[in-house]
Length: 187
Ligand code: AP5
Ligand code: MG
Image (cartoon, rainbow, N blue to C red; front, side):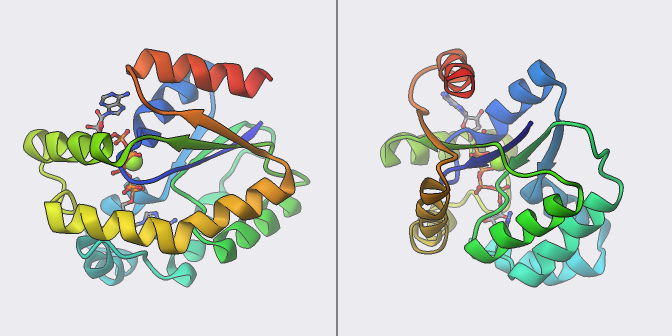
């Protein structure tokens, strides 16, 4: 099973990914985490990506496709996989389709997590106090939400037209959201 998680920053993709990965024994591919690791290690991709992330902008598609392409070189071809925060553009979605096609596979389910913007901002500002992620400042949160609306929302229409989209309410406790996601996968 190949699952794609799409939704605005702070909606709970990472939180729910951890649960799904252990529930279904999936490989977790989070481009955000891969990029933060690359920045920490000072790799070329990390150096090139840093400024985009700190300003809440999308990292260019070619860098993301390079990063994910490398990850796919060691991808166990039978294993289920959860994509968290990738793809974020239609170009990335087409690249993912190409990578999967080589393995004779395709995206099975796209889960769109939705939540109120006030709740999202609250979650991210709380996380800023706890974890201090470099892109959780109030200004960068606003920029990330705007970028999502402008650049990633069209991807949701793309997947809706493919018929693989399930919209899930991301409000409530993490347990409530997780149960809704499980229901949407089973349906
Ligand atoms: P990325 O790391 O993907 O971040 P994001 O999409 O901005 O989303 P977050 O990770 O902030 O939120 P989330 O939805 O995972 O929520 P979480 O579970 O953590 O990307 C970071 C940057 O990297 C991008 O801005 C871009 O620059 C770059 N990038 C990454 N991928 C890219 C790509 N494919 N193309 C181009 N650029 C890319 O939850 C948030 C908080 O809320 C947590 O503290 C959590 O504990 C809490 N919480 C979660 N669920 C609940 C709940 N139900 N109730 C209460 N609190 C909750
Ligand atoms: Mg995340």
